[in-house]
Length: 539
Ligand code: X5A
Ligand code: ZN
Image: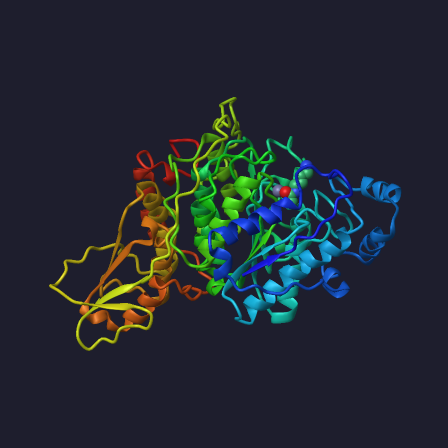
C-alpha cells in the first residue's frame, strides 16, 4: 500500500537543502519502475483532523501552525526561528495534515483488514515534533498520532514503534515516556551527544518514566559507519527478544532511510537491502499488522532503493542475501551492551544480559568502520517466484490452498533442530542464537525438519518458519513426519508468507534453558561474530 503526498512549492530555491520534494518523487518513480507500485493497493489520503492532531499536540501549537499559511515570509521566518532545524512554508500546514492523515488512513486499512501491512510515503516527516514544538523538519508527529489513534479507535492494547531513522525521534519518546502501552525503540547517531539533536535523554539510560519505565529503548551509535552486521545484531540480541516479550497488537515503523549508506546526515554504511531484513523480521509480530511511515532519508539513490526493499518485503517477496555480515564493530557492541544492561531489570529476555561493569570505558579511540566507501552496488534483482510453495504429501493429506502438490518419494532421515520445549526458551534460542548464526552462515538452502516429539506448538513452529525465510532468499525445505499431518496447513500458511499468529506475552524463559543457550552462545561466539553481545571477549 502506497500513499504519495507529493505537492510542495518552494518559492525559488529551497530553504532546506535536503528535505526536498524529490525524495517522494524518486521513491515513487522507483516503485513504478520496479513494478512494485502495481502490486500495491493505493489508499486515498485525507487531512488529519484537529482532533487527530490534538491526540499528541497542544491546542496552542496547533493554532499557531494553522496561522502559517497566512503569514508573510518575514513572519514565517520569525515563527520558524523559535524551533530547531525546521522550515515553514505557506503550504506546510496543509502537507503536514496530509502526512499525518496518510498515516491514519494506513492504520485504518491495516486495522480493518483491508490490507495486511503498508507504507505511507509522506513529508514532512514527524518523529522530531513535540507536543508544542516543531523540530528537525517535522511539524506533526505522524507516527505518535497514529499510535494514539489506533489505541483510541481500535482498542489496540500494545503498540510497538520501531524507529530505524538515524536521528532520535525525541518527539515520540516524549509522547510515550510514561506510557507502558507504547514501546518506543530508536537507534540513532549520537556520538556521545555531539550529534543533533544533542540531547542527554537520547542516551541508553533513558528507559522511560513512571509506569512506562522499561518501555523506551534508545540505542545510541557513538561512531559513524555502522554496517549491516551492527543493525542485525541489535535486532537479534535486543529488539526482537523484547518485541516478542512485549507482544504488540500493532507495529509502527518510523521508517527513515538516513540510516542507509550514502546518506549525508547519517554517514552510516548499512546497505539498502538490510531494510528487507529489518522489515521481514518485524513481519511476524502483531499478526503481521505493520505500518511503515517515511521519516528521513536524504540520499535520493539510497532512499529510493531502500524504499523498494522495504515495500517488496512487505509484499512478501523473499529477501536478498544481506551483504557483508562480518560481525558488529566494537562501538556497536559497546552500545548493545549498555542498552541490554540498562534494560535487564525490565525484560525477562534480557535477565541474563551481562551486568554493566563498574567503570566501562567506551571507545578507547578505536576507529569505527570506514566511511570512505560511498559507492555501493545496486541491490541484487529480487525475484517473485511464480509458485511460492510446493508440498510433497503422502496420500490422504489434502494439499493446502495456494501450494503446488508434488508426489512423495522415499522416507527421509530427520535432523533435530532443538529439544527445548518451553516457548520462551525456544524463542530465546531462535532469536539470540539460531538467527544470528544462520545470518552469518548465509545458507543457500534452509532445511527445516519437524520432529513429531519436538513438542513445539504450531504457533511457535510458524514463527520459526516465518523468521527463517529471511535466509537463503526464502529457499526453504520443510520435512515433516507422518504424525504431523495436522501441522501441514499451518506450515504451508507460513511458507506462503502469511504472518504467524502472536505467541502471547511470553513469560520468563526457564533459567536452565537460558543457561544452556548462553553457554552455547559463549562457546560459539569466537567463531561467529554475530553471536557477540559485548565488545569484551571474556564475558
Ligand atoms: C526526519 C529527519 C532530520 C533533522 C536533521 C536536522 N530529520 N539537522 O530525518
Ligand atoms: Zn532522520
